[in-house]
Length: 398
Image 1 (cartoon, rainbow, N blue to C red):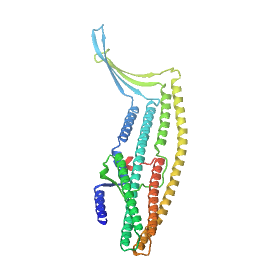
Image 2 (image 1 turned 60 degrees about the vertical axis):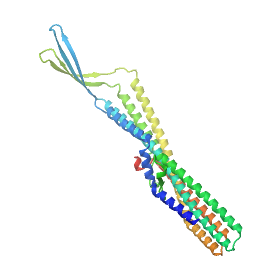
Image 3 (image 1 turned 180 degrees about the horizontal axis):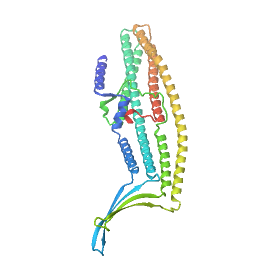
Image 4 (image 1 turned 30 degrees about the vertical axis):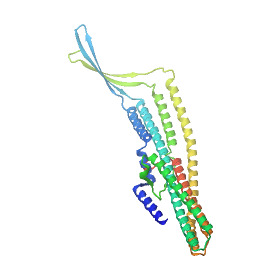
């Protein structure tokens, strides 16, 4: 039995060495490189930036070329005209503000996609870490069960215990083996799910044994994607209102025209031109009012959502503190539980303890170990909730 365990341990060690052990940051980096939706969101940001540049550009310098003829002299010549629009009433500035607001909205959408990816990957990562810990606990309990069985068998051979105790120890050993196999399968399944998100092969992936997700020290809601999107909507509505308000203002342009007639070279005439929609049936006023109302509604929604977001973030802090306190309590008694198992094993092996003592001590250790693993996983999930509530993004996703 001990020889078989040694072989299994060596095989497991070899497999772990062949696999790449990753941290939470490593997982996020891999996922960001293999997430098409995130790449699409990045492209939409670049698209918005290109659109903003075009909206904020100066009016083009237009060149018009034509031909004219005069029957009285029997000649034709070319007409040339250069026209440059001049923004006197803020059209360009308003359009530039609208483009900048569009960029902010695209950035908020990118952060939303990145935040969703982060939560999804970190949740799968936390589940894989928890499954690894559960597997390690089951292996530890399997070792205890094997020790109990060997000690019971030896004492039975010495005629010091009844066959009933050998049977009981054998049953406990079989239960421990099955639990170990089940936990190992659970861990493999968790790694498989994680690898699917990362675009990596499951047989080349593992999680660091002591991996954790860092708790934020001073989180705020300033970077929450939903709040940033609402802020962008306010900016867009304000810019639309400004664009509408100046849409019926006069358009001013300067023009330089070459007339071919008058002398051999022709002559140039400079002129200023104003185009003004004198009556637009209230279109500009109504569009401006509609955009202003839209901005006001977005501001109120932003205020309400910000208040709720702050309460949500405060709730995650309370939950994290409770999870950390629970972990500390179980860590404080874990050493005592292990020591109790060791003492009960020694007592039974040397004849001054009972098999029941070992079984009870093992049951207590199992409960403490499992509660500790569960508490650590719940802490990880609470931290992920904190990330979502604050809009925090890991550096690899920014």
